[in-house]
Amino acid sequence: MKNPFENLDKVMEHRVRLQIISVLVANDSYDFNALKELLDITDGNLATHLKALEREKYISISKSFVDRKPNTRYKVTERGRTAFKKHIDALEELIKQQRK
Amino acid sequence: MNPFINFELQSTFNMEQNSDYQKDIESIRHMMEKSVKFLSLSGLSGILAGVYALIGAGFAYYIVYLPQTPFDYANQSVKEVTIIIRLLAIALAVLVASIITGYVLASRKANKMGVKVWNTTSKRLVINLLVPLLAGGIFLIFLALYGYFALVAPAFLIFYGLALIQASPNLYDEIRYLGYLEIILGIICAALPGFGLIFWSIGFGVLHIIYGALMFKKYDR
Image (cartoon, rainbow over all chains, first blue to last red; front, side):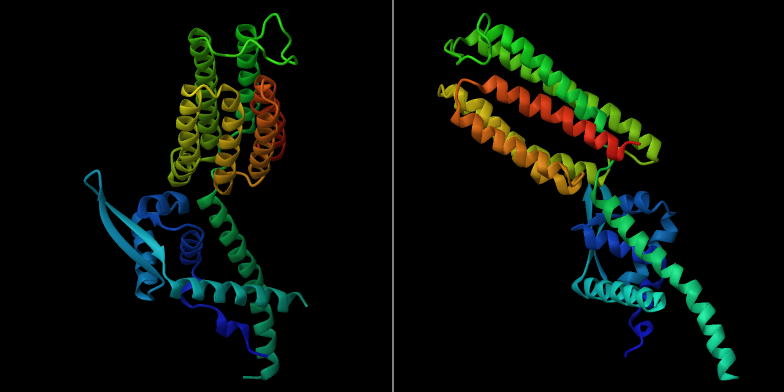
């Protein structure tokens, strides 16, 4: 049998990134401030993790202006959604295996 | 390295990792739910909205039916303009009181949970509720204008039910069933014209009180 460790996604092994992807998979899109409030982390911390996810092309970004204030919205890409699913499957597999 | 030691190391490593994986899964579930659902809505506001609706129905009964009982067919049909305006005023008062109560209780609960009431989720919820309700409200005005008063109560129950079903993904899942009940009630009400007030009281009064109590018991403690 294949080793489920190999299926774990390196980028999503960090919990904040995993949480960001979870939110984006459950919602059409989410903006920076709403994410910050939801995850309860600092601007810099969130920005770093978003960058990491963007680099992997797991999320896409659209910038616009709402009431003249810049508004940045994030969406999960198909690539990100697939990676997320694979990562959860691997997590479940690992938990199952170690319960035996 | 001795392969046996290596195995031991790996197995303790695995055990620690395992609880980590479980935490990962939990945090996924938590985040998904928190980002989608507006959980600050208090069951108490449902109970109070039901009480307001029953009080409103009491006033409406006083205006429209007296001295008949509401269980008799309403042969004094609602056609006088003054009566319609008074009924409208009652309905609006009930609506406004329910919205204010809902908002106040939700802010209190949100404060306690350490979140904001007005966030992405609640905005989405309000839009999801407003679309069917506004469409229904405008449609009702036309029904009333053309004199189809018997259809006003059933149509509003049906639109309200649709609004609840639409909003349920952003609220508690059980709200969906309240929506189905309102729609069924609306359809029965359409088949029995003249008993609008009774069905209105059941749909907006009794059901809200029962549902509010159930939600309060399940989510507010």
